[in-house]
Image (cartoon, rainbow, N blue to C red; front, side, top):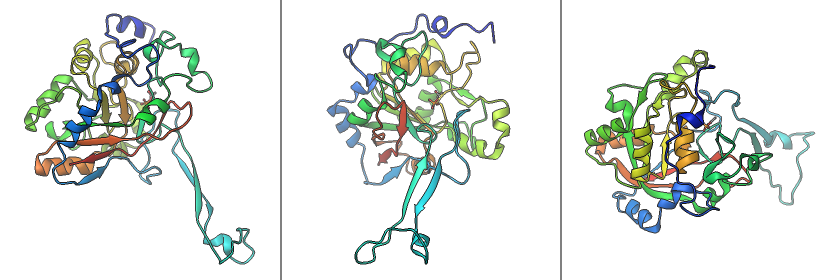
Length: 318
Ligand code: UVW
């Protein structure tokens, strides 16, 4: 570990968008999603079919979790048994009965948007805000400004697993922006400026097959850091990257050894919104069938005061 260079050195010459949308900006590259981009997304709606991209919270198969996070616990607070003989349920005029439940969950334990202030290095978060503003809850670049604006634009599915001829990617398996472009080309589509990228690895299948063994050499598959990849995101003005993995990128960069360099280079520095643990299976099947890999993408993460990220059920409309 000790010969691994600090993130600030690894990303020394990396581009930033700090200040580009003003000193108070908290939504970063989502600023690229103007009303014109919403209309560009709408132009890709052809049949009106809707796909929901959230994984079920509390999936009995088990949630993919970053180490230290725990699976959501849903508790039934009231059900018909509370009105049984001796039950303690409230009585309402007319005999109304009802079910109530609650969950205790990591806000980033399932399909979720990261707030731009979710990760940092060198004491600064997105737009140069001080990391001290995260103490006790994010005062700056929390999920709230992103949740307040919503995310709508042209989505494009890049089915990397299918393109590689695999059922699912393996732990630590990587791909680059060039792979994304080659995959798009083989799918008969081109990644355009301001596209919302949805990248399928189907890694969850492998994760469920491996069980706890996955955590013995914890390293997810995903995009792999390179200065060229970061530059490409910058030039393409990508507002949002969504995948079906916990962290969207190869967990430990094989070249530098640092953890989550793309979280830092893309989210902290460029302000790219990251969406994680999506369920892309249904839409991938559909795209493989009708060869329409572009659609209207819309998402509204939950509004939770000062949160570093919140659950979301994104929609794709074809
Ligand atoms: C971390 O960055 C630690 O988590 P996530 O993958 O949820 O962004």
